[in-house]
Image 1 (cartoon, rainbow, N blue to C red):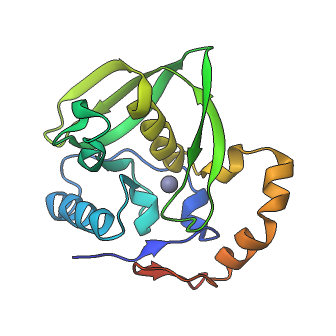
Image 2 (tube, protein in one colour):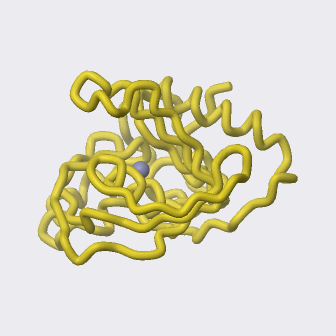
Length: 185
Ligand code: ZN
């Protein structure tokens, strides 16, 4: 089932998300719905707050990038109760976009490497250092779990330049090819 994606300005995007247990209701179905929603919107990552749930659940599908990054062939992952434990001092800048901020694309500077801890869909714990493009995607998605979006991480000048667009998003005034949650509540 395709779920509406919550746009910038929705209060749930500012909440710090909670860990979940394997007993979380209809978790398997929820994960399937998140993959379907993300695919429909042509995204590569989706965090639960973006569908209105303040829980630490993220899905990532990098298979569409396999042409440029062969290591991402069939790369579909579920990250449950994800936390970033450490970050490298070294940083890099890359342009980002977000399904909750359609039309906004800005360069964001982030650590190049991160130590992450998470559970996979079978609730098996993983702890690993991640770098490259995946580290970028994880940091963007895991930010959602901390109540942050990428526009919080751009310079005041760039935010000022996007002011009208962000204000319109918060009012739900945006053209979108996918289903979105527009009205504030
Ligand atoms: Zn996002």
